Length: 332
Image (cartoon, rainbow, N blue to C red; front, side):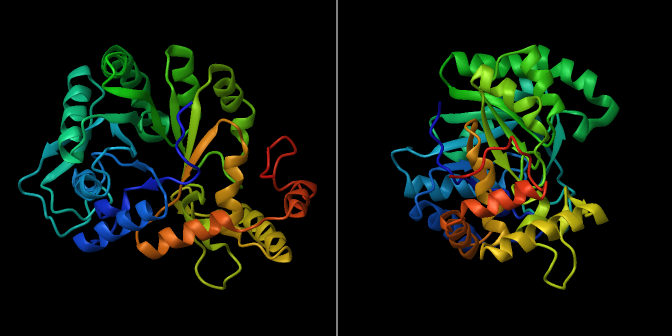
């Protein structure tokens, strides 16, 4: 299995996610992550329409001339020219100077072109992990069956060829749902899944189906979105606005559950965000977690949260209160 390190760097923020990030700040945050020992960096053409890959590639070209870092990027969203785009506006969640927007395309040719474009932007001789980006009903609704067939016949075939030739080390999915992961495991051979938000301190349903299948097949998981869109980072007891859950305003039952978890953490002198960040890593199939890191301060915070001691009594109390599942592995 690939050794990714417990903590990974997600490069969506340096693609100007929701707001502009100056070039020097983007460089600084990558440098801080590198200096902190992080060696797995994840990006995608969609993040800033190539901007994230360009910035990550420029920084690592100096920091990692030997190309020892593990890099993952994604395919399935090709960059379409938009010469008339308003580059100062938020487009598909990014404020980017790149005159493109991303268009879903899971065809063979699109995946091959996407891979070649990523290599150039990243300034790498190879890409370690290639994920199919946002395939599934969560992103595509009723269009999913046709797109999934297009992917199996085209894009997945391209990914297999790239892996079989040694151009990439591992292939998989980068998604927000478990259903398409199971569908893919039934249909073909993948090595790794980046799963956003579905195996967290709030959600452990993958213990029923996905995680046992991954264990049986030797498929690694990378957990993105360990804070469930922010609510597990900030909590609900601070008196301010309630953070989002799963990209939307949190339902009252979610707010109540987070509050109960937060209260138990407080009784044990543990930050809610520390418990949220460390929890997924206890499962043996989880290779890494990817929290948001948009600044050097957030890198430092993630390192500190990962190192925060958590007493066994906290996990025991969460189990006793039925706030995490009895069969969920917990950190030692």
